[in-house]
Length: 426
Image 1: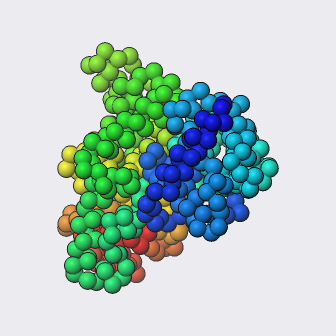
Image 2: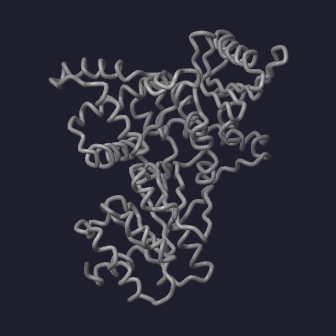
Image 3: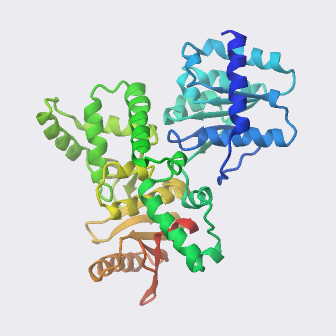
């Protein structure tokens, strides 16, 4: 790889970083560690690296010490693992000072983990991004040898979204009529448009989101995994969007897609294919799943609930389904905050049905658009039964679109919280 080409790429990227206007986000980085940033495409991983680079320069680092390479640059289409050392050579031609390396979408280069391990062993400062969870497979983790901190980067949470839109959201704003109205209005938009950073300024938001979805599906799912039936995959994601709020089984999904396939002259779809395709979509950070806490291990794995990582992408498939968007946005914030401690609870024995159950945090959450008399009886009844069965579960919450209340049933206290307050708090 010619050093002149690499210099052109590094200098060009440097100019982009210089001019980048960064919206503050709720992530921090320890300067003594190397990092791998992962997450959905266009969720803001690269921008966070720009911020790290800008901060380094503000703190006295020379621009020549910033070595940023984006491996989605078409000039690097022929780049292989054997060319990585040329980046180091080029960096040392630019300056003999200590370098700070930024490698964007490095997963495009097979064998990148060997180079990353060597750089860490040589005590270099390295930041890496990628849009596929395969970067964190067991083999790659073994090669990295614990030398990198892994940080998941999600689309904007609601606080970050409000910051990006210059809307105050401190405690005073919540109690000021005009400002509270702005927050509620932004909540309605966030619910439908999601939190991908560039969506905020997009004029044709749906077109932008559709483009991102297709890019993720084709590049990060179909192409990277050699998917043989892209149309089956598309139909699967659509069916999944219609099943948010419900547990699904792979056999049921396979039958539905086989029926669609017969109309489209496709072959029979097997449950194994469904499992593979869903795993690919999870690896691309398009979707995530939660399991039933009370189910046996095999049943947990066979009938999870699936949610979308971004509400804007989910909304591409929906028509006037605000309740679905509401539950999905609650699932996102819980998944991002509590990781593997989020379950749903659905028991045929006790008839208890809880949308989100967090046993390690003694928390149970129901989600409903509004507390009508029918909804109130169902949602409150399930929480009360859970508390009676498990008295240690004391943090009982119902998230709604607008309703706010505190309900006392015996020794059971239930907080009814509008979604904008729930998201700001979490």
